[in-house]
Amino acid sequence: MSLVAKDVDVRRGARVTLRRVSLALHPGELVAVVGPNGAGKSTLLSVLAGEQATSLGEVLMDGRPLASWLPRERARRLAVLPQEASLGFGFLAREVVLLGRSPHLGGGTSGEDTRVALAALDATGTRHLAERSYLTLSGGERQRVQLARVLAQLWDAPARGPCYLLLDEPTASLDLAHQHLVLEEALRFAQSGGSVLAILHDLNLAARYAHRLAVLAGGRLVASGSPAEVLQPALIAETFGVRVEVLDRPGAPGPLVVPAAAAVRSPR
Amino acid sequence: MSVPDVAPAPSWGRRARGTLGPGLSWAVLGGLLVGVFLLAIAVGAVPVPPASLGGSVLAALGVDTAHRLEPVQEAVLLSIRLPRALLGMLVGAVLALSGAALQALFRNPLVDAGLLGTTGGAAVGAVSAILLDVALASRLGPLRALAVPGVAFLGALVATLLAYRLGVRGGRAEGPRVLLAGIAISAGASACVGLLISVASDAQLRSITFWNLGSLGGASWEAVRVAVVPLGIALVLLLREGSRLNLLMLGEREARHLGVDVERLQRRLILGTALGVGAAVAFTGTIGFVGLVVPSLLRLVLGPDNRRLLGATALMGAALLVGADVVSRTVVAPLELPIGALTSALGAPAFIALLARGRGRA
Image (spheres, rainbow over the protein chains, first blue to last red):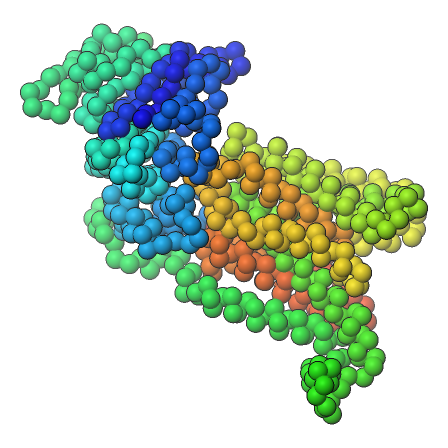
């Protein structure tokens, strides 16, 4: 049971944005996708989300081609947090989160759905925003409310079977405390049996929370493995063009990546 | 900054809505519609007093009463006022509902059939059909009554599809693009109508002029019988989509990930609005701003949830148009103000107020 991209190529016109990329998301796993800008991270996420057609290769969810799933069935086990959402109507934050329950609704909203929505608001630290109009929220607050919406979508799903949460830069506009809050919540989701794929820019956040790192560069998967395996100074210098020191601290939850003095060689 | 993490119940942030529960708002709007309807059948050159109307209804049920309608009152009521009020209700409900649906489709609270060019496309269709009527009348036979609404529907469909193709790219509705596309389509449509007018005969010209200003004056039982089919289908198609429209408002990607068959929903919305607006334009001409003002106003009170909003929008659109019709035929009696001019006179300032109010997002 897994979400798998097999030998995927994506071409847009003459440009190849993904080349021969294979990646599998297993239950209980948090995978962080890292890489420089334009490496194809978001393209890979949209391929796994079924938004982007592949030029070659295929995407399977639990053994079946992703495209063959009925939309509603798929929505009960695959949720996607886009990088930016464009909601131009004044729903209350609570109502936005309840929209995440719609793949489960029969007719109206049940008490169970309300309970889940409130729990998801709690989990993302947005309970106090529940009665605020989405339009009055700041960028970071909106992002957390959207995260609460996708968490609500898959709230009880890990207990019922495999399910997949795809997060496109979930920490992008968050302060330090909320970056950790959000990734802790993602990790908890994985620990309860779900699978998470998150695009992250901060290697230290990735090292701390991810079970596995997938490094993309130029549309290729250049490395995949545990944070300790992947975060090597040579690979980081090669991929990001930044010289770093990697500090291994005994007992710490992951290696620490620190840019060296005069670190930037050739920003791409 | 010492902002407490758990704020006290915020008294700001537009919490005014919710004070009027859905049940109450239905009662208020339903009562409003009934009141306006009674006014519409009572008021005019030949007054129909409600007491006599009640008496006649009772008499028809076999109860003997003193108050009865005069024969002329009865004739005016049955053959003029009743079909006119019914057509007004149907058209008003459909126009308002189409506005709400298009706003969700384009994820923009500031669009409606008029601004997108749907109305213009329908007018081109209707005018073309009038001009071709003479040429085709003999061949169409009984289908002739459907020619004008049918071609108006096609015009509305083409215009809406064009607005969608131009305004939405890669699943993202871009506000400025949508509105610019609407301006371009409307301009093209009015150019077409202008060209068609230049080849029209005098008699055709009179019918066409009526399209540009809008009027319920063409209402008759025959018109109601033909119009009720497309207008009714549009109402049924659009009223069912409340919860899916909510998800579409989140964004196309988001709706897809929440299990909505987005392409199918979009087809249904475009078809439903084109059918409704096409029929509305065919029978009553271009009546602007109803689709813009009614949903925006109701969103302020009920919030944006389309499950509550759509039914209320249809009720209020119906009440608004019938009310506007009463005003249009009484203020300068025995003449009639064009109802389209009246709704624009109400709608333009409301639109400006929406724009002025916090980035125009209701």
